[in-house]
Structures are given as C-alpha cells and as structure tokens.
Figure 1 (cartoon, one colour):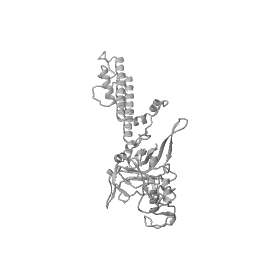
Figure 2 (spheres, one colour; figure 1 turned 60 degrees about the horizontal axis):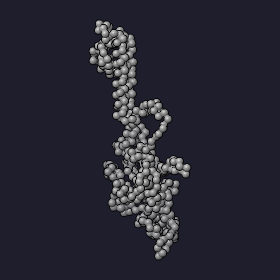
Figure 3 (cartoon, rainbow, N blue to C red; figure 1 turned 90 degrees about the vertical axis):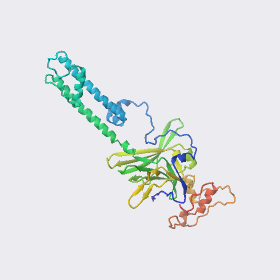
Figure 4 (cartoon, helix red, strand yellow; figure 1 turned 90 degrees about the horizontal axis):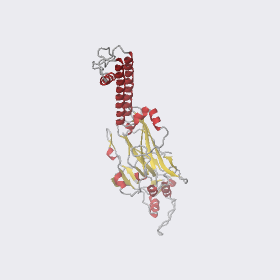
Length: 410
C-alpha cells in the first residue's frame, strides 16, 4: 500500500536548531575532486559531438530549427546580411539593365528606371523598392519589360524574407527554454527520514504567477561504467517517485523512498561520499498560457546530496493567501539520521542487526520488542512496533547516532 510522505517540520524537536545553506554545508566535508558532470546545473547536457557525418548539411537542411537555436546576435547578423545582399544583388541587376539600355550614356534616351545614372542610384532604387520607401525620385518606366519582371521578383523575395525573419523571432521568444528558466530546482538534494523510511528528496518551484496545466517529475541515476576490455559506457537507472504528477502552484518537495528496489538501498553516508554517480532530475509540464510542452532539468553529484538534512519551511498559510518565501528555497536544516544504508537501517528497526558490540558489559538485544504507543497515537500489534530502547542499544553498540526519542513504526 502506498503511503503519503510529508516533510518533517524544522520546528520538530528532532531538528537541529541552526539552519544552513549550500555553501556552509560544503565546508563541513572534504570531498574528493569533482568528476565531469553529465548534466550541468542549468540543465544543459555536457556532451561534445565529434566527427558527425554531414553535420553542416543537416544544419542547413533544418535551417528553421538551426536559426531558432542560435544566439540572438548571430541571428541579427544573418538577417542583416540577408537584407543587404538582396539589395546589392538587385541593385547590380538594375545597374546592368540601365547600362544595356544606354541610360547612363544618353540622358535623352527613354530610361528603364528613372533617375538611375550610376551604381549608387541603382542600389538606392533597389533598397527603396524592397522596403517600400518610395521617395518619388526613382521609378519604373514602361519601356523595359525585363526591369518590370525584376521588380516583381524582388517584391516576392522581400515578402519571403520578412516572413522568415518575423517567424524566427517569434519562435525564439516563445522558445520552451525561456519558460523553463522560470521553473527551478533546489541547489542540493537531501536524505532524511520520512515516516520511518530513508528518503531522497529535492525541491522544485515555479517562479511565475501563471502556472502550468500539469507536470510530471522524473529522476535517473547516471553512472559511468568501465568494462574489463577498456570500453566505456553509461548506465541509467530510474528512481521511483511516489507522487510524480504535480500541479506546481506552490514549491513542492519530491520524495524518492529508498526501498529494496532503489539503487541507493545499500548505500551509506561513507559510500555516498566515495561513489561516482549523478542524479539527473527533470520536470516536464505544459504551460497554461501557451499550451507548449516544456522540460526543466538539473543534476546532483554526491557532494550535492546532503545526508541528515531537510528543507526549511517556506509556506505560510493565513486567512487569505498561501504565502511563499522563496528566500528559503535552497535552505536546509540538520536532522538526526543514522549514517547507515537503508538496508542496515531496516534491520536495525527489526532488531535483526548482527550484534558485535565491543562492550562486553552490554548484552546483545535480540528479544522481541514489547508493544508501545505509536507516534500518531494508534496502537499496533507487537510485530509492527520497536521501542526506542532497542534501537538506541543497537545504535550505541555499533557507534551510530541514535535516531529519535519517540517510538518508531516499522
């Protein structure tokens, strides 16, 4: 049966009094050198493609997507050059027509284009025609059918260029990447206890007033793999999220319960520090204003996953509003959590953890725990309950930090 996992309040007695930010947490532990990230914090994949066959041909074939993805300054440069080259191209044609008709040698001759006596006049006529300026000094005559055809072709090409420029500009402004920048993840992920189970959690929030229609959260463990033959590849493992479908009206903490099916089930704090993996999280959603599908991504390395922390409260409910304090979005607080894996912690709760105490005066506690009242006040059968004395004794025998002063449901 699925359980609903709620975040523990920092005002709880089991929470340490002081709060901390990402910068202060990093100063506590001396981590090893950082590995190369697969996904950067801004969501971009840190992947470099080499020797792609016919790369330029693919970019030119899909020219619309190419122009949408390039930078604004490059796009402005390309469009400015396209206009200038078109003016020059048709200006040269008008200049050649004027020379062939003898407009430059004999002023009394009936011209093809009025007031075009040199290349400068031909260029200005081309510019005025394509931009529909119409100063009134230069114009077409009925003497040259070739010049009339050229003007018609230039007008059609001008419409195509204007349509293409406007379409690219609108597509870039409505790009999904811009909307994705207003949906953010916390700078770090945390591991703590929720309902008596170790959970990995991170926070996500929408910074705009107009929220999305629906969204789905997803998480994967990315781990590089080196084979005995020297071949390298990567392994992906999905992390199960109990409540992955979200309506992100307020910031939400996403939980992954570290169960036997989780790749983190046998990972303790010490192993977490030594491991080389990357937690890639994403949130795919539909914007209610545009109806466009967006995705926001980020990643967490082991040094950005903080054991024994939880996120600070940032929601305040009053009579009229749900007030959200985004200054607390990345803040965490310390809590008391055993530095063992989820597998060892489950054995500790069941009283089945192997007892090898260095203290001979304390006997091994393997007896059946008595019935006690639960945290929520509901009595349960004896096989579902363990007393604090049992957990505390086992923790002390193995040099662990005792979890809490309250009875814990198994």
